[in-house]
Length: 346
Ligand SMILES: NC(=O)c1ccc[n+]([C@@H]2O[C@H](COP(=O)([O-])OP(=O)(O)OC[C@H]3O[C@@H](n4cnc5c(N)ncnc54)[C@H](OP(=O)(O)O)[C@@H]3O)[C@@H](O)[C@H]2O)c1
Image (cartoon, rainbow, N blue to C red; front, side, top):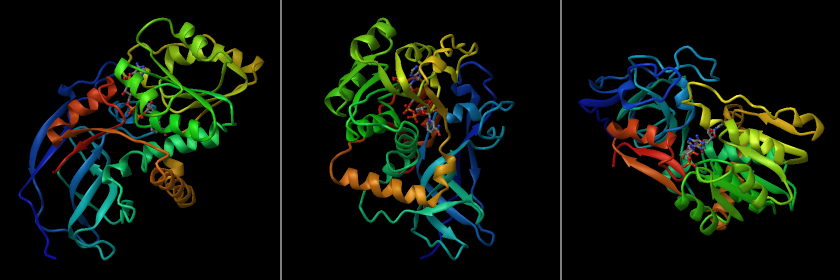
């Protein structure tokens, strides 16, 4: 097959550090550049198909931060996980037409060198390609590792998941059902709450933006909470601490309620972890994702459950790389259900 070198690349450039408040579109810029006409040894040229936009990217926008990821570079395209097609190759391991999962720029075309990790997607089981950025990708692996290995669920236990209608939360809820638990989810709209119960098999769900959180949780978890899968942190975590059962586990996956806050919420109820003998553990999934044994087991279990119809998954797809900033900000504000993805090229 012959290589194709497109003329122009449409990119989203990181223009300005938003500091500690809300990110908006003025912090990013649309740019048009030329794609080089030749590749160096070991490089491949990708035509980017799908880009994953994720909450952790907000932390990468703080150029002076203590985030677990390095900051994005000002003046360069933002980056993220993506699915792409190889359209030119100077690397013997990859040929034109291969579909790969790798880190791409927020742009239509990316050149990747041989040092960058890149995984071929054979997709023998014929899943939608976007699943590799969602339930079969990083968010699915996060739910699987966090809930099973850290949460250590036991049949009959009560599980509460915040951010339940998102990419990670939807998988956690269904894993909880699979393990014989009772699962309650919270989300930011009545439509999401209905979907959690009617489509995704949660036992109960509520809109955290309405009413008193403590009262609602006491009503829906009359026997207390054994596992809290925390996607949001802040006041919700503080409230849940008081409702945890002895020897309960708090899986600290993320704290999205804090990412755009200029004044972080200060916990007041942490003292209960001693008396209730709670386990509270944070984690980041990158270690597991680079472990082939973990990934093999995760992929084998999750693809089997998907094929058996035990899991449902949904996504929110925004078209066009020029709309990546609004998709990203919309996701941070709750406009997505399931995995937020940008379809770059139709
Ligand atoms: N530890 C790890 O390795 C790891 C890996 C992946 C993700 N994470 C974390 O897991 C969490 C979920 O990530 P995701 O990719 O699945 O994102 P997501 O849930 O698909 O999207 C983010 C969701 O957060 C909710 N949200 C926004 N502001 C909120 C607030 N103030 N209070 C409560 N909910 C709020 C919104 O839903 P509503 O409509 O419900 O508000 C929004 O849809 C994030 O905290 C993320 O940082 C951690």
